[in-house]
Length: 297
Image (cartoon, rainbow, N blue to C red):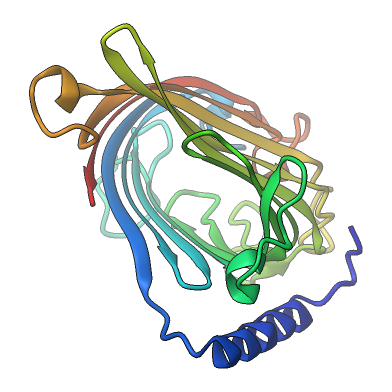
């Protein structure tokens, strides 16, 4: 992927195409479907590079996600609030000595669909159901020693894979990250080199006997992003896998199907945040996690 490709230029082309198609179609944009999902996760083996001598600490996580499909594409929001144990302590002035750190992580992605914008199926071929343009951003803040204040911008094509049910999409993007590093330079922001990123997400419902299940999750592969500042170490390829299997508990107990979900997943994080061992401990994360959630359609 060409790293010199301008995210601003991509966005301008995308919204130019959107505006042209919208005017020609004469259709007022509307929401086709939407879903809110509120969940709680317990991650017993969470690690933070450079913290707690690389030892894992438990984390309690609450997530609120929202997805919709509309006339010309789709949108996705995810808000995570994570509370860590005292093994990853907070450095906030107002915190108690034994209180673990807290983290807020927000994700936004929007995709403009080639088929929807053109009103055709020209962007469907072979196993590809649609091709769109994906734009998005991440925002993260945490009050531990590292003191993350991450901002990330992404842009690139998204490919929707044809599925008999559920969905599967794969995005190939240019990403640019800004962050901080409290270990070395508290205060100033760092700017990493733009790099290539692959993002994929999926959801596939299936059934084993009388038990309705969903296999869902996401995976990210982020290319080497160099050094954030002159004294930083080189950040290498980062891989995050987050698959899970959820049981439709509501269906089993006579409640509304597809609402109350519970299950188990596995999170694998290689070179977490692009960090490596050495120089930092705690850069590889392996953890089973447990989740319960509720769908608000």
